[in-house]
Length: 226
Image 1 (cartoon, rainbow, N blue to C red):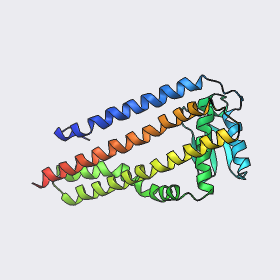
Image 2 (image 1 turned 90 degrees about the horizontal axis):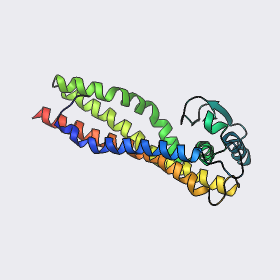
Image 3 (image 1 turned 135 degrees about the vertical axis):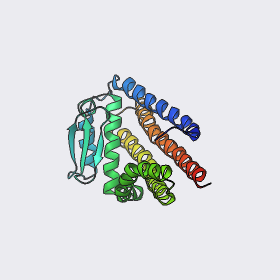
Image 4 (image 1 turned 180 degrees about the vertical axis):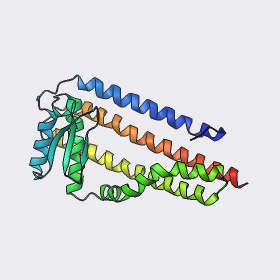
């Protein structure tokens, strides 16, 4: 937004976020080179887990980009990046199963996922409008705008917080399906877990950055009101 002495509160969280992103990239790359013993592709694993759970109405599609994998609850589609869709690595299977874990959450009406979905419109607006509104209010000493910006930011932070249990739960479901379905051996499951844990750490880092940014905004508002 702009530099001021309170920015020092955010720096540790920013360094943590950078480290978390490095870790997920390095861990994913490491196990992307390790072919799974059973030799299933990510798309095959996704399809079989879905079918075994009676979810034939959920489709599996290829999508471009790296680590762009996601589940779209609106169209009931698991979208997998090229290296996950066609890949037979431990990393590919872990990521594919994780996205199917979100589909399982959706089918089972998992509470935190439903709450996150309902919060998404407000959080989306909040993430875009929070800083601009706060900045205008700060520059022109308009306390109401600063307060609105802060509440928008709180809504975005709430969305990030509810994302944490959603992601961790999807990973637990994924690892159980990979193990019980025989897609990964006992020695490979911890490696897939390492990939998913590294990915989850980026969500924790995002919460840390947002939380420290919120503290910063509150301090700035307090300084302007004095």
